[in-house]
Image (cartoon, rainbow over all chains, first blue to last red; front, side, top):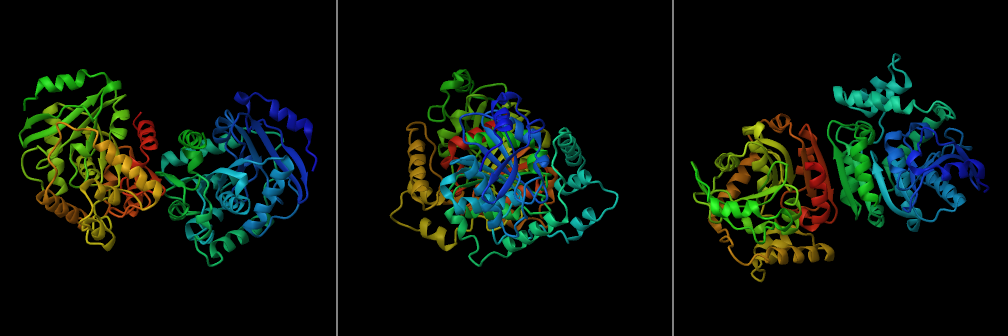
Length: 297
Length: 297
């Protein structure tokens, strides 16, 4: 339960205006459930905003165009869950298991009130955390995600996704461009700009996720989609203000799931972007940051 | 084609900060298609924002909490279409017919570039205007409305609507509260505040619409819902930036129609509000004005 105080101190003392996910040092914290890698930067009076990452993504998959402007008026904490990157342990095969790791992490940091930005898989974990410990969570951004019992969640066997994932000519970043952005010229250009921003961090990077991470996370997606029979009933208990965001052409977690969230969460606004896929927050990063700031303030 | 320059001058010279739909004088303009009542107030460099009204609504049905803050940085023009209020002529039985009246009106005023805020019926007219004269329209706010070929548009025979419309104990304003807001305590309170704001204008009011207006407008809704076979094809030609807005519990024009708009218009953002019905813009007027301003600027 001890924090690496040297690097943590460095990060906290960095001027918020210069804080960046490109340069923030990776820190490590031991907890009762294992040791987690994370990055913490920015500052301000608002509760820290904890980022929960997508399928196979690591700390290095957060877009500085999203994280850095948000860190100007609050602390941003990027969390690496168990079994991903340099965090220890195994990836849980359930969303509940992943939520337990996030709770162990915030407890070890001594945080008692946070905002959550959950993207895709991370948005499911955010919902579970809000259910498991409601008092912890003030507000939530749920981006490109789905409720438990949602529809067509991460069916990578679909022809349009299989074609991309099985293309031997595509590098990892170029797969991201195809998966997260639409085929239009402007969306693809936004995708290239996105992967260029991700590449700006050249040192202290996390190892890329392998098939073991993917398999466990896919199992968690499957269980989340099947649900437990009480379809959307749990959503009524998530009373925090939520901002649900998606691209209308999301092929990985279709926008229908965002509609279901906004219709069943008691206090959720929905925002959708045109000509945008799963990575709408990266494509429309200026608008997204403005909307997120409005919502969080 | 002559404008009542005295009252028009008064309205234009009013300080934008004090401009209000409560006090703006009703003006009249003759055109080749008839004489229209309207109110024009506010000022600023942006194109004028023309408001297109809902089923049976008149100039007096615009909420000052929406119109007045928007008038601080642009001219707001509230338009009374043919056969409604003190505008002459008959209410057309098609959306196209209503769009022709709006075009006659803007031509008579000499406007060549406008933004449109179309609410419900008004949102359909806005879409038609954008199709009929694309160069006129810069941006559109489409609130509580539907595409041509949409679903479950204004089916007043549905039990939940018939119950409200047939209740002999409800006054006109109280019918609005039931129709435009959800049954929740907070939504109903917002509804009462809304009708109180509408009542703040005590002089120079428009006559209330009668059954003749309602019948013609219902015919137009029916034709719009049936469509012409090319379902949503026309939407691809509306390339203006659009902000689509709705409450997730709209019983008159269900939110599904807003999804269809946002999914098929090439450049539309969608915003939905929780625990809100058809009148989401009036219930969440502060947020709506902020979002509309962000979008229009």
